[in-house]
Length: 407
Image 1 (cartoon, one colour):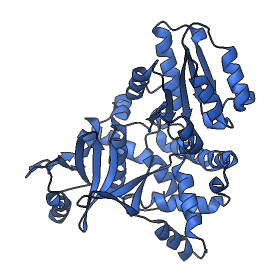
Image 2 (spheres, helix red, strand yellow):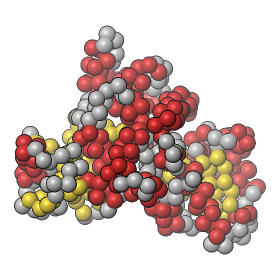
Image 3 (tube, one colour):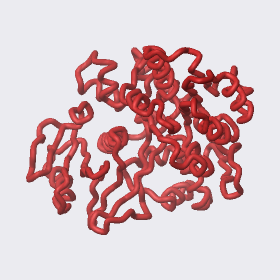
Image 4 (cartoon, one colour):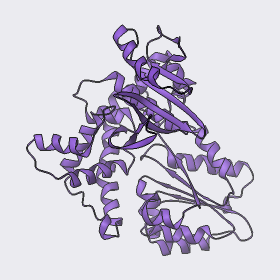
């Protein structure tokens, strides 16, 4: 069963034939390759000839010889249809050494519309970002939204489906499983090991500058840090706090090393950083950002023996959903209080608090307090799993989170 990602397909359609490189980024197995295949089907249905489409997946051994940038460029040029637009799809382009040279040379051709995917943020960092500045648009792909998950299933009550969504995560293949309880862990372990072993090792092989040669050689340390981060979603963390945690287990380690290992987990889209923003001072803060994990199923795989915190898990899902909806997201600080999320898109700004339940009077007051202190008139919303406290409280909307995800 194939999960159609309508919103991402519409973005590709929007940018079709525009003179920009379409770069689709995201975690392994979140659906990037399938998205390209679906878009190619749309092209064929709209009258594009098969000869106008060149599609290469660099995870396929069939194309191993093309992982040299010069060989890739030569291959594509030899297969171009003259006097017609050619649609070039290069999947997992980070497998090609010096891929930016091939991309840049193909981009300048007038009859090429170029689409690439990558599973590492390195794709758009450093030399490539400089080389292609102003010439690409990034489409950041995430696992399934709950709305997509719901549309795929629709076999259970909404709240039952949301419970499954939180427990097993939202990777497309898991969502199509009849009984994920028996298979999800093995599948997630395979993805995680691929990211840890294959992607991070490949990333190191591709580093070129002296400043960029961080060595991630201790896989046990990397996995310990990954588990620490997975258990700390929703909590402000710093490199120092992670270093102290590792040191407390009897290992001496520097903050610089910890920072390198954390970055190694951010680059392949396992964790997403959220910076803190001083609402009164109108500036980003340099310390104690939060990191959210890309998929709750992956989190459960990492910390399966820990108590599951429903409130923080829900907060993680809200953060990802705001990213899906095109917002830039920060954590709000106002005095000693915190607003879980400030979501900004253009001139629009929204404040969000997230809590598992508002039925307890103490919790109700605690969640309301930061939003009451914010003096501007932008919308303020509290998202909760309970259905008893929904309503408007002096301009602050309390909304059921499941309904909000489906909205």
